[in-house]
Amino acid sequence: LLRYLKKIFYNSVAELRYIYFVEKGIVKSTIFREGREFIVFFALENEVPFSSPDLIHSGQSLYTLETIDDCILWRISRKDLADLFGTSINLSNWGRMLLQEWLAVSSSYFSSIHWMSKKEQYQYLLEKMPQLVQRLSMRDLSAWLDITPQSLSRIRADIY
Image (cartoon, rainbow, N blue to C red; front, side):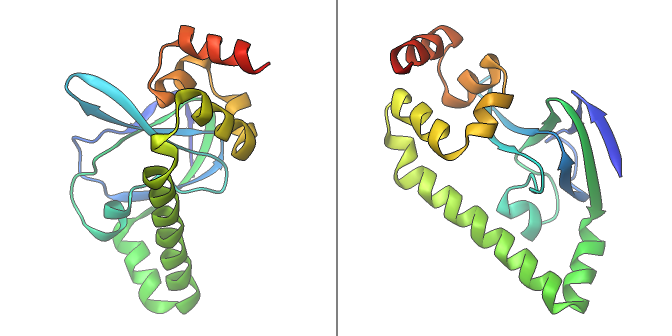
């Protein structure tokens, strides 16, 4: 059990030895490209902040994980998780369902959401993830949408 307040708890330059589970709070997953930080996803309560390669391959993850508010996280070593998957069909099925959910979300994003206008993306978030929109800062939400906070303000003004 770990408690964090706005802290990077895993940096992508290190080997990913643990898989985390969010009991309370929000974890931001970022990737750095061309000198910029891009927000890939957010994990909320009862979610696991990971990419599918994190569960499959050992070594360095693609992502940096950071808590953006007061968080309670559980962690398990990748080895212990693999051992548990080998001893329990229920846990193994949970791991498989986790990967299937990640694949479905990723597929949905790249097949439809990615191609929406920024206004449509924001409306989609309001409809599908209102609790996330309410809890994120303007800075994080606009960065996730890959727009400026000013552009997000204009989109919000247009909608409301």
